[in-house]
Length: 470
Image (tube, rainbow, N blue to C red; front, side, top):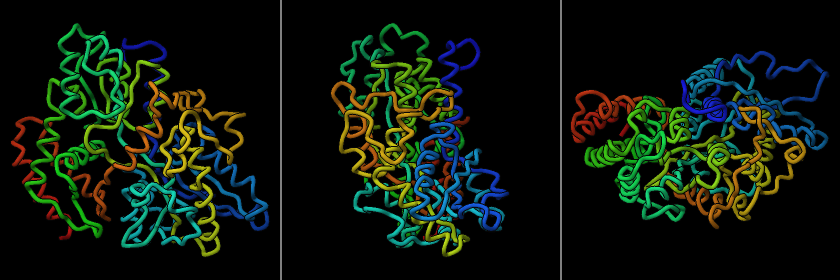
């Protein structure tokens, strides 16, 4: 929301959206005093490197670290959380460089789920034993699958993520649309019909087009593409479990066609082709669209703005799985690695996952979703109720949005099924190169000339065959 659009609340939302973009960001891994302690001065420290916590200063991750430290008498170590803001690309390249060079003494790293194969293959993180994960059967299967590479567990899911569909119920009511409650699910065909209904009536104030998403030349375009490809081709995968290329031109053509149809005018907001998370969130918050594809962390922010006029549903078709997993670095000594595994077990146990869900993250365990209707009990971090954490806007990050909307549980009936049914992005140590290839080849859909779907698919297939084994 720039210029004259929106009042103070809108400007605060924009600031929050920009801050939230740094969820998965780690940068400048220069080490400093991160791992060294003067002999005998303090208890040994386990250093955890992570991106910025979207629940703000002293947010849920820090509170869980504090809860671990409060039990120092039990395990004899303290943990320190190092938050390193920056873009996701900076996180990956600089963290790789820091671990390869040994310039940063990190014991635990909070990695994007797509990076596990690369860090494992490079020998920068170590396989984990059962001591690092409590009650593994409680982990959501689709989410836990991101923790493995080459048949071994290298990480434990910390917080998950999945694409959701947000919508304006008041827009649909005012347009006398056939449906105003979509929590039971909606197809893309039905979504276009609902957009037609809004377009055919006197349009809401500030309204421009039906929906928006993240299609700028970055990871958001890859996410939207994988969702379209997986929706168009049942069982679609670009790579197998060993990172070998498994798609073909026919499958890619079907996926490109699906992506083009989803993002064609008059349905998609024109600027979505250059939008990231912040821009798409702002467009929806300003009322310029009726629908938005975004992540779970924006639910409390949007509900605070729109109240009962906000709706949330699963995405039509397939949704991509996101999130971060905790891993132990190979550079940690055996003693520190053992304590790091204990810390990971604590930070990812059932109660910690309830704490994360309460704060607005998507929990990784089935048990966190078993008691919908309110904020799940969070016993680890007693400060949650006494001193709620600050959001990027300086306000409380305690989950303000209700769990129940029109009798439907957001956590149990929408978020949990979305996580269980989500698809992974390509599993490969070459993921960075794969996503850059997808972004570059699919740019033809949004630039001048716009070749046919088959030509775009052929070019993409050729590029991926050169890049990937198999």
